[in-house]
Length: 479
Ligand code: NAD
Image 1 (cartoon, helix red, strand yellow):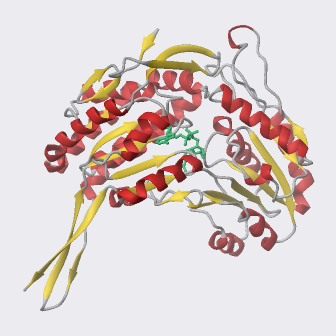
Image 2 (cartoon, rainbow, N blue to C red; image 1 turned 45 degrees about the vertical axis):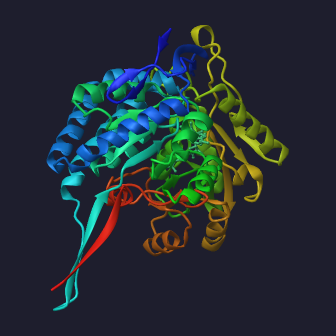
Image 3 (cartoon, rainbow, N blue to C red; image 1 turned 90 degrees about the horizontal axis):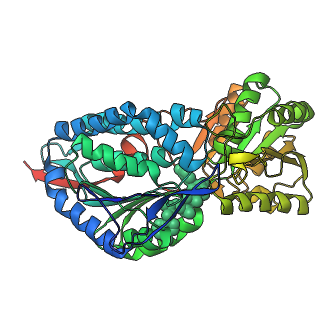
C-alpha cells in the first residue's frame, strides 16, 4: 500500500513516529493509501526548517520568487491529468469537475499570486514641509496554513501561494481526509526548485498535527479554512498568543429568487449552486427562497431537473460523485431524518444510492430537495454541507431579507432579479461577505473573499491576502 510522505526541508520524509492511518477512496469505500500520522515532533522539524529558510526567501528578489511560483503553476498545468485523477479518487468528486475547476484553479492561484506580487505596492503619507511617512510591508515569518477536504488542492494553494509570494515561509497541513494532491504538490515543488524549507507540508490529524501548528510559538500567523467549530477553537487558542488570524468558516447560504428573474438562467445555475461537488462547497446555496408567485413553477421544474441528475462512478460523465467519507455521509443522512422530524417533506432524494460491483461500498447520496420547513428550524439554520437543499416561499423583499439573514452564518448569497434597484438594495442589506446577482461562483481572484458572523474573520483574495501575509511598518522621516 502506498505511503504518503511529509515534505520537510525540501525532502519527502516519513513521520518521525513511523505511524500512519488509512486513506479511503469515497467511491469504493476502500483504503488505498496510508497517511503520515504526524505529531508535534514533525511540526517542530517543519517549523525549524521554515524558520531557517525565512531570511533567504524573504530577501530574495521579488522577480526570483515570482519565477519560482510561476514554475510551480506551470508544472501543475503540465500534470493536470494526474492531479485531476488523484483529486477525484481522493475526494469522490466527478473527474470532470477536478479537471475543469479544482486543478486549473490551483494552477491559477500560483499564477495569480506569482504575478500579483510584482504589482503589490505600499503607501506613503506626506506631512507637507514637516515629514514624509512611508509604509514598509514586510513578510512576517512562518505562516501556518490549514485547509479542508472539499476543494483540496484548490484551497491549499489559495493560502500557500500568497503566503510564499509575500516572502513568508510556510508550514501547511492539508485535510487528512484528502491529502493526496498536497503530496503530489510536494513533488512538484521539488521539481520546480523551490528552495528547501520554504514550504513544508505536514500530513496528519487536526487535533494532533493541526493543533501543533496553531500552538507553535514560532508560527505567528494562521490562515485556516474549515468548519466553524474548529475555527472557534483556533481563535481561542491563538488569541492569547496574539497571532494574526484569517478564518474562512462554514456557511448556510441563501439563494433568493424573485419572480422577475430570467427563469431558465436561474434554474440552470440553481441546480449547479445546490449540488456542485455533491453540495460540498462552502458557497453552495443551501436555502432556496422563492417569491410566491413562481414558487409552484419553480418547485416542479427544479425537482424534475434534480431527479434527472446522474449519481455514480466519478470517472464517468456524472453530475454527482461520492460524498467525501462515511461519517460525512451519515451526518448528511441524519439531517434528512431531522428535516422529516421537523415537519419537512422530501420532494426528491433523501437516500443513499447503492451501486453494484466495485462501487457497492461507495458513499453515494441522492440529490435531495425538501420543502415545508420554517426558516428557524435546525435544518434551515445548521450547515449540512451535502447534496441537500430546502425550498421556502416568501412574499416581500423584507421577508426574503429577514429569512436570508436569520442564521448565524454570513458567507455568500445569490439574488435572482431583473430589477436593478432591488438587486442593489438587497445586496446592501444582506449580511454576507459575498453577494452574487444573477450568477453564482463567478470569481475574480482580485476580489475580497470571506464571510461575516460565524462564517469567519478576515478576507483573502487579491491584495487582501498580501495585506494579511505582511506586516505594515510606518517609517516617519522629518525633513
Ligand atoms: P474541519 O474544520 O474539520 O477541518 C479543516 C482542517 O482543519 C483540516 O485540515 C483538519 O485536519 C484541521 N483541524 C481540525 N481540527 C483542528 C485543530 N484542533 N487544530 C488545527 N487544525 C485542525 O473542516 P472540514 O470538515 O475539513 O471542512 C468542511 C468545513 O469547511 C465546512 O464547514 C465548510 O463550510 C468549510 N469551508 C469553508 C470555506 C470558506 O472559504 N469559508 C471553504 C471550504 C470549506
